Length: 367
Ligand code: M6R
Image (cartoon, rainbow, N blue to C red; front, side, top):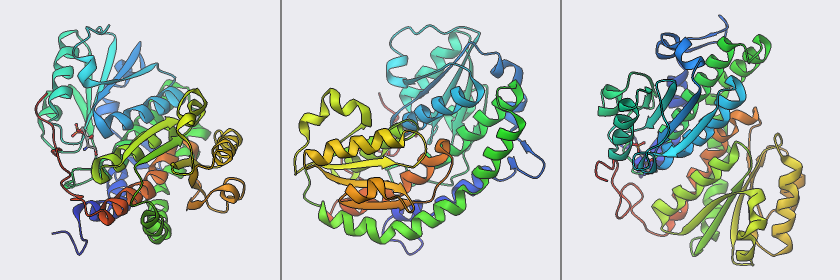
């Protein structure tokens, strides 16, 4: 049932072109120029008139939520906050009937997320669910929702569910923006056309980075720390890359917005510190080039995740992982894939139990 792969995690990483495609299927209709999502369509007015959207989730789903914030604020111009469900539920947050809460959960069974939803409902908010497991508790208790169609995810470390969550959040943001007038039809069409190419680009990145991530992993089996840096849409991708490594390899890793480095973490950098830096050409490219130079000046080991054909960052980096270019807003979907592979191979070479890391469960149904 691992389909010839050594672990479920690797199988699930390689399933992403299909799981993203399945999540888009029947929804992204580029020729007709529409995004079809019943849960959004049926509640369009309520969603677009929300005074604020609060996204609640845990772990990897929380990282997806952070990217969801960037997407919804950019394209639909609705204020978004992202909270850990475990914090939200215990701090009497300001939520009313005018609010929308989006709960993201792969399993649909996470206790903290469930409790946060119940509280939001008691305060009168409309709760929209993004779950992967059909008919899960969270999908049943929410007022409306959209499923990710990633298929069963067995590996404890979330991979294909994460990229499917990003896919659904992209669809939601584009659809809201189109209907509330913040996104021009031309821009909507351009983004939809690009979104349609993502499964193919994920396929390309799997093929082109599989060997190099294995090679890089060999050099870092004995690392004790890792930093992951990114800016804009790729800051949450850096957090997610770090979480993947921690969970399965037990190497301490932290994600940071690249510009925050100078406010503290730069003190950690020496020749023993590997730093994964996500630097696609769009967005804040020139800023990230100077971040890389600052790291190299302190002898940090840079693993640069850059667009194909990059020269500026690539020329100073110690290791280069290339990925196909896309719109900045979709780049975390593609850039996350080699980070999953890197974490996977480091863990495998360390002899760790990748599918069932110590102390972790697939769904956390206790507090
Ligand atoms: O099923 P959920 O999406 O609600 O799970 C949330 C977290 O427990 C989960 O993402 C966890 O962080 C994963 N092990 C990450 O790989």
